[in-house]
Length: 320
Image (cartoon, rainbow, N blue to C red; front, side):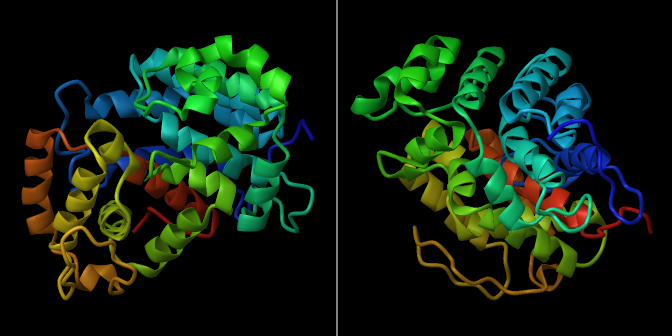
């Protein structure tokens, strides 16, 4: 399906909501270990994320028209990298593009609505050409990934467009690529899991943001802390190791009042509303420590960005 841009009943353009989600995610503070409006990393600045959000716009618009997924994603990544000068929001776009495409799904009752079922249908409809475009998009950025399983060496994402013959020979769709990468050497890839499992984290985060109170940027920060406490971050595990990722989650859990998490264990249930439990002052101290240690939970930020988009489509307002 092509050629139409949908808005919700209030007339809000889903592309505007996607762009706003990118901006709100990076503006939330404190997000321990990540760039936010109060702290940069050594090689990545807050303003770079603002540029990346603007640069991705043409690709977001393409997805919201119902254009083929892969080229829309590649265009968004290329625009992001050109404007930001680096990889700021690759993972965010990997989740936002199918969610945007879901707003023009034929089975959606109300124009502009986004549901887990529609997002899952979009993922299942992806093609080999979409997979090729995904690999091509990786040529525009530097993405931290682990070595693939030995049997999948020909599909190492670091090969970029050179992997196209293998993708075509194996009939590998983009969802198939995500299935292959959902867990490598015992390290789960949360973004790939979203694609395979029907975006459960995205919609849970959206519900939490909607149920929370106060400024949206504070809600985004609390949602980030909640998600990181609940599940170790993929990027931390990739850049360090699985044990560091588990310890990072345990340390974040310590800033949530009323929770006692044993070292290295994931937390299944955390209190709501988060506004009554998250100690943002303690989280700020932890944020500085993580930056100093080079602990960057970027995959958690991707999930929060996707959750913000869904929440905005469901009525979240940034005005007082």
